[in-house]
Length: 378
Image (cartoon, rainbow, N blue to C red):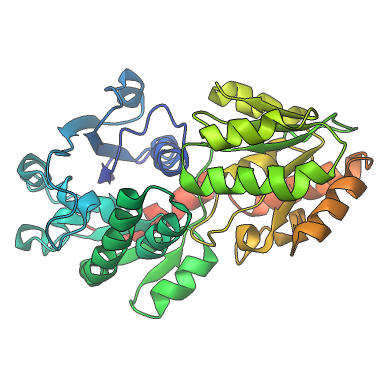
């Protein structure tokens, strides 16, 4: 029978529906898995562009929305902007109405982590990234001077703010690599694999007809990866290549136009991306940020055929054995040419299914959370 005496607050940095990008995918499918185990989730989420979602009421005992106060000067103050703009008294008032455990999603949501009113509460923080590393890397690829300055400033503030994590009873890292970093500074760090939308491996046998790169192209990291592929990899191939993602940069559009065998698909939905992943012969996923874990990599391995990555994409993720890893442009070109003619057979699919039955299982990960709540009066 469902265990409905267990209840938990989850504070999300964004409205986690629709689950259409990395962070909210982890949040949404975590809530869903907890619901499936009979846990009552009291969700608190910040609004800044996304609408209230009736679908969340289906898997949450209660849903509270708060406005993210983005009018403040992003260059002012010592508290990180992503934290300061999520500092709401109404949230604290709602949290102190009971004594349920609290799960903070990312440093973004930790404005009340050190509040004396919560000192006796069981508190967990889900670390989606080592945030100051993430912002440093955003600054490296940003071409806008003002944004570059902000990212560097925010990185310093996040590094200083990280000490607040010592007030958590438990830190839930999203990758083995992040766990190693967090363990060097804090106690009670647990690796909790990323939650994802996949119910099972849907890898198709046979061959696809193109190479695919996908991602949210308005994110500097993804734009950099797409430009790298066009200039250093795809331009050296004759195989059909597809880049899919919303809001590509003007530079990326210009570069793609020069290559007849490269197609840019600008307007995409979750469903259309998943279809492209399934149809492709190879999903190629380079990154220049070895932070967290990329959920698009997990999706590509659940849905797609061959997956070619560079070292930062796969470093300490536990997914190395399922991918072809390239260390430079030349080896990536060779891997793409070689794998484009290699059909997927039954044993390839069986290997992938066995791996994901043992790893990245949403219900098992949710059980890890409930085991932490086992000794908490609730």
